[in-house]
Each structure stands twice: as structure tokens, then as C-alpha cells.
Length: 245
Image 1: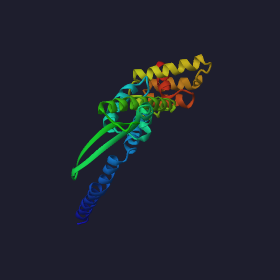
Image 2: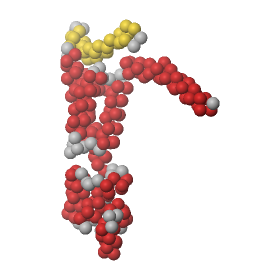
Image 3: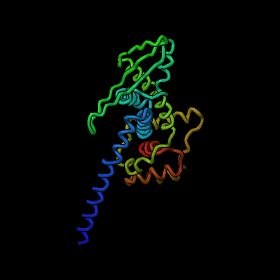
Image 4: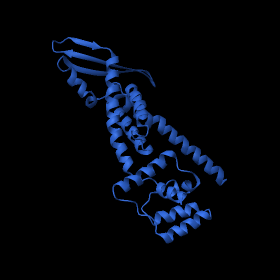
């Protein structure tokens, strides 16, 4: 009886959530995305930033592909842009006239929309010059490519300074070999420290004896932990150091 009551309660709760989601939340969000000129650009930039920071993308680590994908996607999603994004375009056409970028949204039936973007220039003489939407797409492509390149560079630098996570937990470090990229990072960091006269602090001889014995006994994870406790090596460097003992 108690189990049946729980099932009915969760079914009721699920129904309430779905009704609220599709009856109130999603329509409100959809209306915002259709009629708010800023929310599309902000959302796209936020998603891009989260992906860069989460995956630690840099110019040396495939961020160019991410920028290309987001640029193409943003060009199609946010063709009309917003007053801030369109300001450089306004400056460019100001000698000719006033820029007008508009998005026409026609609601034929619930959930059925026809969205068209258009660009015109109101000349100083009063004449309206209609331009092909292709120019708007080209401008938006360049705009987002530049924007993502700048933001990606800044966030990539920030992500590169963040300390590496304790590698999925040291368990994964002991079970799996370092990737080629991790090997290169560890070697480059140790070389940088040596050239800067700031060689990493290594464990004392008595600790090294214990580490060697642990390695012989197959206790690689414990050996790496011990090296980290008595040195200034990062996780990748410590693993590389133990494996070379």
C-alpha cells in the first residue's frame, strides 16, 4: 500500500512539473528568445565560456575548432543581433545613412512562427536602401569570430593557470599511463623550472627508498601520494617521477 502511494505521488509530481514546464516556463523562455535582442547573444557567449573553461580549451588545444563551430551556429541563431553588436556596423554605414536591422516574427498558430531578418539603410535623403541579408550574415560571422577569439584567448589563459584537478582522483593516475599531452606538459614544466633556477623540490633520500620499495610492491598509487607529500611536483610530474625511478 505504501509503495503504491509513493508511485502515485511521483506520477502526480511528474505531471505537475511537466504541466508547469510546457504550460508556463517554456513559453516564457521562448518569448524571451524571440523578442529580447540581448538574451540570444548573452546565452551563446555564456555557453561558449563554460565549454572553454570546463574543457580547458586553448589555441594549443583545439579551441580554433570550437570557435569555428560556435561562430557558424551563432551566425544563424543570432542573425539580427542587438544594439551593442550592431554598433560597429552602424558606424560603418553612417556616412551613407542610418542602419536599421529588424527581425520580423509572424505567429501563424500556437508554436508556428516565421522569423525573417532584414537590413536596410535609411539614407540622409530619405531614400530606403534595402540590402541583401547575406551582408548581415557575413557581418555576424566576422563579429562572432572576433568575439569568440578574444573571449576564448582570455578564458584559455585563465584555465591554463588553474591547478590541475587531482586527476580523477589519484586512482585513475595509477591505473592509466599519462597521455602524450600530459607527458609533454610535465616535461615542459620541469624544464621551465630548471631554466628559471627554480628546480622542483624533490623527496629526500629516505623517502625515495620507501617510494622505490612501494613501487616494487606494486603500490604505485601510494608511492605517488608519498612523492607529492614530500615534494613540489604536480600529480603528472609525480607519476612520471615514480615511473622513472
